[in-house]
Structure formats: structure tokens, C-alpha cells
Image 1 (cartoon, rainbow over the protein chains, first blue to last red):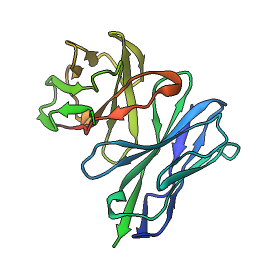
Image 2 (cartoon, rainbow over the protein chains, first blue to last red):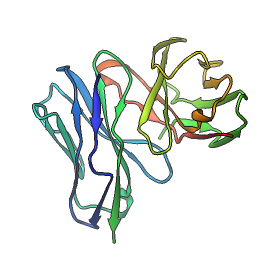
Image 3 (cartoon, rainbow over the protein chains, first blue to last red):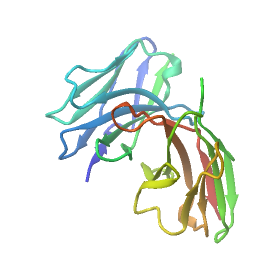
Length: 114
Length: 115
């Protein structure tokens, strides 16, 4: 069975600085998707970025980028120029090609210091 | 921007009572999901639903749970006889497509407390 591990329960960063959130996963599959979701205090789970495992190029969305290391089964999220609005829980999630369910990490609480 | 909505935001119920959690998926979406998150634990998949039937379910989704799309807009999760361990945040999600283009969009959740 697949598992997702986020080893950092909490991270803090100074506003305008860069922070990297870690995620590792375990799977025997070669084709899958990886996601980062953000959950602010309002509770709505918002998609930040997604990565298809067959793509070697790392996904980027504005200030958010990933470092996808398939061999190491690592999928970290880098947030550049951190803003106060980035404060939230960040969840890493895995989905195989063959089914629909997302498998989640435990989350990392990101604190932005003004 | 279209959003998934869920009602109620909070629900308190007595053990053994039935509860129905409601979700309105994004209007052109065809795939629907329920997840739950027990306090302090990971988000867990419960069930996925497509074309008026369950496409996948987890071990958690036993006979006490059921899902329904009673009309063109609502997607409901029913827990027939609630237990204390059903206390959790329940998230609904929907996606337009499955496969390569699939991204699940989530509602804000319903916090269920079983006393």
C-alpha cells in the first residue's frame, strides 16, 4: 500500500523569505500523481500544485514550485517570497493512475512571521 | 470561481442517530468524493461516485455509510447509526474528469461531533 510522509509538523519562515516543505512517499507503481494542497484557517482545501510522475520537469505555479525526485520518492514544495496569506496547513497527497483516491500526508503547519 | 459547498458546517448528534451531510459539487463535475479527517489524524478516503454509482470505497466505508445524488446538484453522505469514532471533519470533493486531467476540488468540510 502507498504511504505519504511529511516529517515536519510545523515550519516557520520570515515574510518574503523562501521555505521548503518536505514530502516523501512509498509506492511500487511507476505512474502516479502528486499534489500539494493548502488548508487555511477557513478550512477549504485548495490545490496548490500537481505533478505527473512521468514528467521529468518540475511543476511551478507562480511562487510555488516542487522538487520532484522520482528515484528518491521525494516531492518537496518550495514557496518563494513568502506572504502572510501563505500561512496554512500544507498537505502532500498521492494518487495512482489506477484509482481515484488521494492518499494524504499528515500535513505541515506553515507559520509566516511578519 | 465555482466552489464546492457543504452544509452544515458543524453538526452535533447523539450516538446512534442518523446524520446526512450535504455537498453541492461544482456544476459541470461528474466525479464526487467523500473524505474524512479525525482530529490529529491524516485525511482518509471514504468513497468515490460516478454515474450514479460507487466507483471505489475504502474499508472505512462500511454498511453504516451510504452516498446518494438525489437530484442534479446535491451529493449526500449518510451515516445510519453514528458512533463516537465517527466524530471527524468530513470533506466533499468533485472533479470534472478522471484520469490524466483529474484534479479534485474540495469543500470547506462539515465538522461532525458524536456525543
